[in-house]
Length: 217
Ligand SMILES: Nc1ncnc2c1ncn2[C@@H]1O[C@H](COP(=O)(O)OP(=O)(O)OP(=O)(O)O)[C@@H](O)[C@H]1O
Ligand SMILES: [Mg+2]
Image (tube, rainbow, N blue to C red; front, side):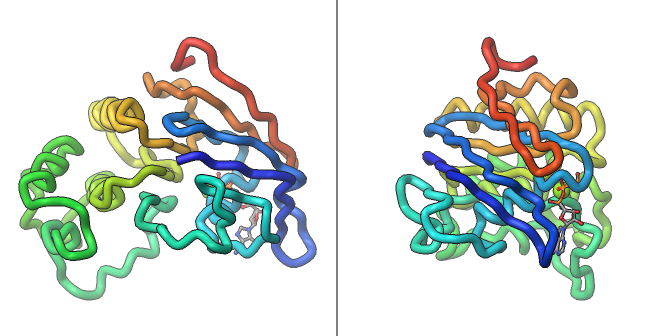
């Protein structure tokens, strides 16, 4: 998926969080979004997802204005942390990741995916019994079940152990090689061997966008 952001300015109430931000991504690009706490990283993502309302002609997905964009199935999104996740009813990993008419996956593809993200053995666990990192991986799997063309990951490896961080980035790199555009928010651009092609750095509402030469830094 191609993404074009032109002169995006956004704030909550009186406070401007993003000032005149512009950048474009081509299909298969892999963007790292960095910046201090409160610099507007999650806010930017929520603008792209249509959660934050912005003027028309500011963000285009495959040349379609997000106000008109209908095919949200093409976007896989894993939000930042799940502290406020609703645990009130018992549900298993398998039930969350159920193959249905709303998913593009077959049962076999699903099992392959669970193996890839390292949660195959957790299939029948109640989600209340999972650790934060395990739950994170369940949602990463969920975001991949519609074969997204754009994958947005907001600090996906917070609370994930080292071994699984490496495994995770390996999977993300593979998905990216298959042509999925990826936007990944991180505080540790050096933590991984992620094959970033671009970096967007947010500071005081302003953004610096640059290309990465030679893959991971
Ligand atoms: N729904 C909201 N209403 C009002 N202000 C908000 C809202 N969401 C975020 N903000 C404010 O906007 C600013 C940017 O927040 P945002 O969550 O985008 O930062 P971030 O870069 O993702 O930070 P972090 O690294 O902590 O996740 C912060 O000052 C925050 O308090
Ligand atoms: Mg954030």
